[in-house]
Every structure is written in structure tokens, then in C-alpha cells.
Image 1 (tube, one colour):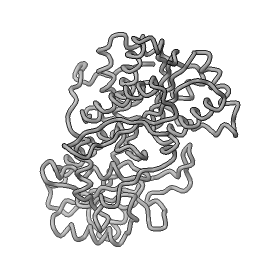
Image 2 (cartoon, rainbow, N blue to C red):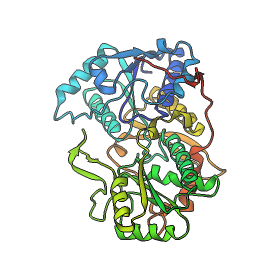
Image 3 (cartoon, rainbow, N blue to C red):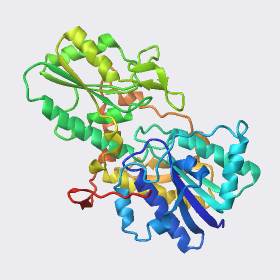
Length: 409
């Protein structure tokens, strides 16, 4: 059995559950320490960037008082910090990989855990492949996180359930607010999701809690049509005065152009920056219908609203972190941990591991059968998929009236 030290990092956009997964890795590593397998668990500050600069925190020391792990599990954002660094292939920059392996050897790192989304899984895949090619014995495990729920193979991703719960709660509250006036008005809510509409789809969930839902829901999976949009808004306006429309930030026209695209800006990965689909649609409604209209971007609270955690999400996030350590100790490497949903006896989930190469750089779309024929609402099948993921509430610790958080650096 491979013995030595372990390192864990967090990468990409934070979530309200990414620290619960970190807690799971710590718990799993502590169990491995008791068996004499893992001596120390280091946390890399700011992901692979921090690893290259040797910025670490000893997580066994930081959590020697195990009750702190419960606080960590309810702390939003990435407690170890994050980064947006994407590794080049080792054929293009082998010196970088040589430097990484030098540091792995320096700290006797034999277990490497990377918590992240698509780009992080790409890093996991490349690092695992390189270490295998040079014969360095190490177990490299990808541990999923993303509020976008767009990683392939896994039934869902840690972090999505809590973000979905926040979106559904906020939308339900907004619907109460906009219903108090008789004046005709349209409120357009923009929700995160560049290439997959999972989070926007969760805006339908007030339907299971009070029987109301947004009038219209638009996802990137169906081409956006301006004429259909205006026609549907007009039809809904004939039924009641206050309309709520939910749209993904990544909705796009039939030619593939994003509704809210800003062609002059790209992010670190070459993705075109989006300047706001809701504002574009607000102007369109004002021009075509002339009624009162407002645009709301839910923005960062979608991924850091730890006051609205899904207990299901947090419990599963801890479990998948623990499962990652178990998989590594059992000899697996170059894999990502996944959730598999059992199909009988209600909602049940088990963890498994699949080659990360099957996941990296892919996008899991919302199935067309989860979207209605018109492309502007979510079907009952979609609701049944989403519903279990937001269930349960987490009891938070408070300090002078505000939630207590863990700060590691």
C-alpha cells in the first residue's frame, strides 16, 4: 500500500458546498492516518498556482479540533482559495510538469486531490497521465464541484443542490413581491449557466412549494427566439399583471450567438464574456411592449449563499470527499468521483469513480425531455430530477447574530 503525504486543492468558481467536500477529504485522510497510510495532509493555497509556489497549510493541524470541520462544512467559498490556472499539455510545457513533480517528491506527496469543475478535471487528467508516464507513483483523484451541474457522467455535482435551493427560494420570494401591484410589469431574472441551464431550471421549484412558478424559463439548450419570447410575455400578461421570467446567462440565438455576448472581452480560458442577457431582454420588452420592466442578476450569491444550504447537498459533498480518499487508498488514480442515482425505492445515491478523461472538457446539458415543447418551461420529469437535491436544511453556528465561518489563510 502506498504511504506518504497527501495534498488537496480547490479550483475554479467557489460554491457553498466546496468546503464540505474539503471536510470529507480531511475526514477520509484522518482515517487513513490512523491506519498509517497518510502522514500529513497539506492544503494548497490557491490551487495548483499555490502548489507551485509551495504555499501550504497543514490541515491535520488546522483541524486537530474535529468540531471545526462542522463549521468548515457550512462556510461558503473556497477556504483554501482558488485559481483559474489551466495546465498546458506536457508536450507543450514539460518544464512545468518537471517542476510539479519536483515539489511532489520534495514533500513526499503520494495522494493528490483536486476539487473543481471541468477545467480542474482537465488539470487532474494531465497531471495523472504525466506522473504515470514518468513512473512517479502517486494517486491523483478529481473531486467534482460546480453549481452549473454540467460535469459529464455524474448524476449531479456537489454545490448544485445548495445553489438550486437558493435560486428557488429567491425566485419564490420575488414572486411574492411582484404580485402586490396591479400595474402591468415584467421582471427578468438572470441566473448563472453559460452552456447548461441546470441552475435556471431550478427556478421552477417553487411549483412544489406553494404551487406557483415563473411564467417563463429559458435555457441555453433551446435556441432563443425573440418573436416567441415577446409573444409568450404578451400572452402571460393577459392572465395577471406581475410577470416573472427566468433566463440563463448563456441563452443564445439559433446561430449560436449569446444573447448577452460582449465580443470585445474573453476570460482566462478564451470564453466570450457575457454582459447581461437580462438587460438585453429588458430593452426588448420595453421597445416592443412599452410596459414597466426590470432586470435582476442573481450574480455571486448563487454560489456563496450558505445561509440557504441544502442538507442533502452538504451531506453528499462530505461523503464524496471521503470516498475520494478511499478510492485513492484502494489504488485508483486518474479518476473523478461521481454520484450514481439508484432508480428504485425513492432517492438514493452511491459514489463511484470513472476515468477523468471521460469527463474533462465535456458539458452535460439539460435533457430535452426536461424542457417543454415550446422551450420556455420545465417538465414534470425535470422537476422530479431536481426536487430531491434541495431537500433538508443545515443548522448553522452563529457569532453575534451572523453565521460563523472558518478562515484558513
